[in-house]
Image (cartoon, rainbow, N blue to C red; front, side, top):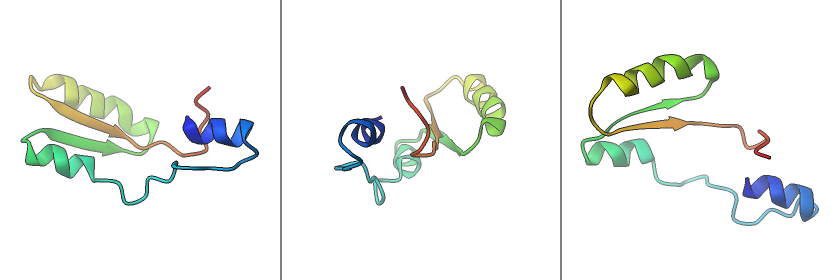
Length: 72
């Protein structure tokens, strides 16, 4: 969302929106004993949500979204 606002209202000058090298949150969840899954498409969503809801425990579902996807 920040990237989109900067693109639309600040002539494309982007600041603090590149998250390359951010922590691997799935690995971090694993260190706490939390199951996780990373999905990249809507085709994966139904199965991932079913898996998440079938477990009666904490679960991290990471949905990777294109930086160009509109949020507004």
